[in-house]
Image (cartoon, rainbow, N blue to C red):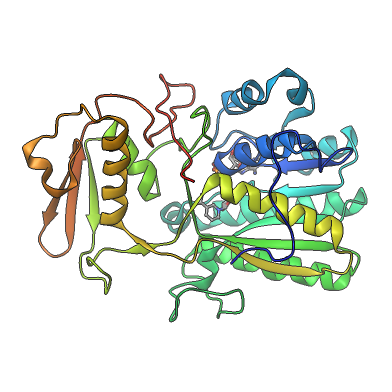
Length: 364
Ligand SMILES: NC(=O)c1ccc[n+]([C@@H]2O[C@H](COP(=O)([O-])OP(=O)(O)OC[C@H]3O[C@@H](n4cnc5c(N)ncnc54)[C@H](O)[C@@H]3O)[C@@H](O)[C@H]2O)c1
């Protein structure tokens, strides 16, 4: 599961990236901001490009605030849309980049089913443009955000990088196609070094609580949904399906902390710099451990309860305690509802640009 042979360790300002310049597409997004922050702390000069389709300018302001003025002077932001080639030309005209980490993309499965053309245009055209402009400007090192969705509904878990690949929806097909495309491009241009990172389910946030996942619209992932219910932004969470063959019947996912995921990107980058003949290679970024929906709700409750021992637990909370209730609805569903009254150091939406942040902690 981990990227072998490279260390992602090192503290703030440890300087591995000194003198190197990295372009981060989608740098204002959830995973992008955490990676930008860690790149800066490692001594890289970073340019982030984003069109704010699913993020806000304040996200990068908060990164600047966290790293302080000296490191923040090494961060440049350029507003741009990858589907517009001229935008990318401007980005590459501004500076020479040693490598690109490519996060920019749309990622909501249900939206991709409703609007497949939007996903093809954004994810595929955006990446084709990026590749063309990188090639034109002699930048040939790329870390690409793929997804564990390329394993489809795996017959065996955990999935390894050589497990069979199969996309089950238009979003997954964009990732699978882009993996194949980047493999073909590298084959035709052997000097290219490409790492495809297949993420499982990123969650959590930087320990400051100032950045994190704050999706626009209805969250597509479980944890932000639980968080939004907990802080009262949404009334309830429907848990669909109690008949999976799992410990408690609810769906299992492999959740990885976003700070660990960002570490994984730095490890990938360092591996690219250190390995001239790497070609195009895929790595999983996950923990190899599964968590059910109800276990996630319960873990959230415990984290909250621990940080806020004075919280009074409503009777209906049942075994889930601390202000979040789950209602089973027959065999096929359950509802979770509730409120977290005290916004302490619990996992919750950071509400970028909206309200007082609810802080998210990294578990060590
Ligand atoms: N979060 C997950 O669960 C997950 C899992 C697997 C893979 N991924 C992949 O990781 C990448 C980053 O995910 P994230 O969770 O940070 O998502 P995110 O939506 O928070 O970040 C993506 C960023 O890219 C920007 N963007 C989108 N299209 C763009 C375009 N055409 N031009 C410029 N900017 C554009 C968005 O505004 C956003 O800031 C995505 O490619 C996603 O498919 C995410």
